[in-house]
Image 1 (cartoon, helix red, strand yellow):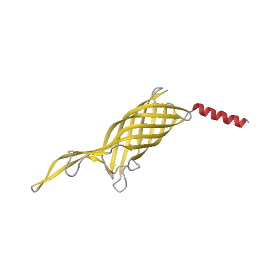
Image 2 (image 1 turned 180 degrees about the horizontal axis):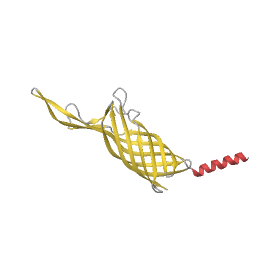
Image 3 (image 1 turned 135 degrees about the horizontal axis):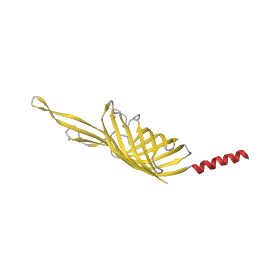
Image 4 (image 1 turned 90 degrees about the vertical axis):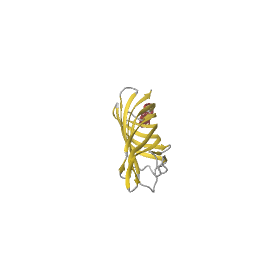
Length: 203
């Protein structure tokens, strides 16, 4: 009887502690696009969305989010043409790869000492319209959709968060480029992501 009472007390205290908070967040997104061994210039963009954090205990919680952002990279290449019997540089062509995404990060959080926590998880990025822009376009390169990108990209990440007030927090994450973003049968393409932002939790 004493054991049953103790178990009921533990279960009751766990249920009493468990709670879910909703919030919003926004911030800065820096992505690095790599094709094979070639690293393109980084792309800066914003991210914005909402979150739900379910507190399991004083130390642990689970968090899910729904964000919008855009990943990608940029580069440039010299353009040449043959004029008479000479090869002449005709200028520079800019290349911009854009991957607008709906992202669904899911993470486990550990509060080292409130208000400071560490997190780890997976970010599932749903590509909306991956495309490439050439400026200027020419006979060999024209702007349009990138056909060989997977519909869903997966990014493992580590992060940290600090509550600067009861409702406000700042967080930072780094997403690793372990998993290729393109379909098989072509040169591997990978993206790493750094994010930093500000959030607000509703009480």
